[in-house]
Image (cartoon, rainbow, N blue to C red):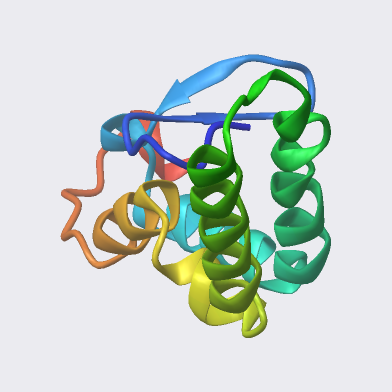
Length: 109
């Protein structure tokens, strides 16, 4: 799941669904799903720092890396606020507020 884009939602099967094509209630459900799992998602996202120091050289670069890691971890202390700041959640939230013309096709979705 790519939290840093707001174009598509990737389901458990790996299928990518365009957020703009979702019905609002489905987008709302996806946003709530992210919120309910925000702590675990934040933990996994922070895994990007594993091994980052192994390829950085120089004292200043290491200090910069440490500062960036500290900023990232502090930002995720409130995991729900953090998840709401991601492009994916914001796109889902925006779509959940959309007005949709009910048609026979999407009535049963």
